[in-house]
Picture 1 (cartoon, rainbow, N blue to C red):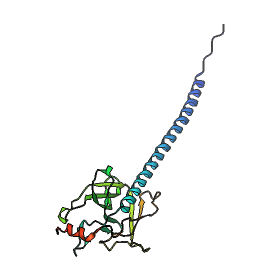
Picture 2: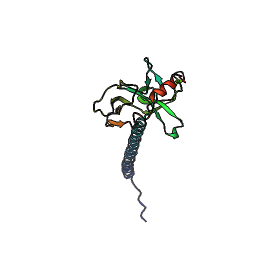
Picture 3: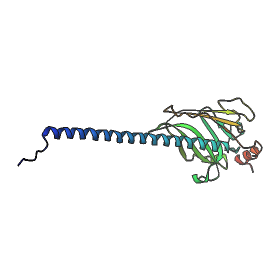
Picture 4: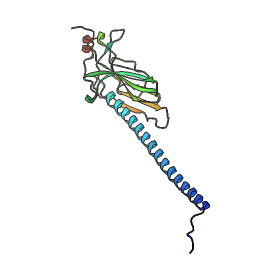
Length: 214
């Protein structure tokens, strides 16, 4: 009677080596798929962050209101301040943010400890008088920002200015350019037309109230 012949050691080693190669190929494919999925998810999250910041700026600037929050050194009411890297204006925030009434909104770059420069928004309730101006809450609109550039145009003008020099009136339009640190998903410039009619608010009356004149 013939004895059953098993596998030799060389055959077992060859089978194990082939199995290891197959498992390595499967692992590489799974790892590549996982990395690609994670990278795609991070890109989508970043695009959503950028889109959210753009829409917030577009909505709030478009609804800017000529309500003064302070009087300058000449006693004139200030309803809009802006230069190339920061802007302040009054607008009403969406109700879901939990901030009722007109808010003074300030937009500028700030250094974040873990995220480099970030585009931040600072909110303060519109004061009843100059002495009521208080610092409010802040929120990061967009992290990892390299540069921010703002320009302004008067109503009916096509000339862009790096600073708004008439704080007693609203500009006609604001252009926003943001370059993230990655440099690959830089915004195309966003141009926002301010909707409020120049005669919609009695700025001088609001200034008298701000100064405490009955």
